[in-house]
Length: 216
Image (cartoon, one colour):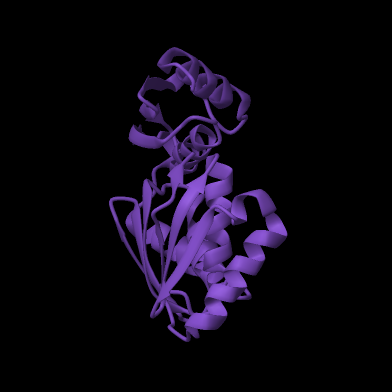
């Protein structure tokens, strides 16, 4: 197991390695596997990229975010401008059903709502607006239509896990409750955890995935 000092160093190195981040503006503290990121960045995209970079580091069990988004100069836009840009980019997303996602913008923060058929459509909607100029944050309230056959979902997820990562598949348990998939068991890294949850979300009709997996 890494010491707090080693974990802090590894996270700092990963932030420095990520070209989309100005790592000099971000502070890192590590304590018992919990990493806290603090500081100021100039876009929500940079904040999100910093979060993802930290989660890539082995040994990170949880992440606390204390990063502020400070928009500078031309990065500042009115809520009306942001809403118009977000509406346009969503309408240009070809695999998203027309008018299936609605949005509200307040102080640069976008809240998405609506209902889609698949998890990838929900994720793509969030990705589409995350990088727009002037955005300070995104809340995802999009739901997925429930069309779940519990037996098929469980079988599909287990097969997907075995195809993609045979070592982890034997240590992850899948249970289905209505449109909710619950994952338990042990994983060895955040990437393995992401793989398991992604496999669950890829099954049609899944509305929510409860991640109750622990690190080995």
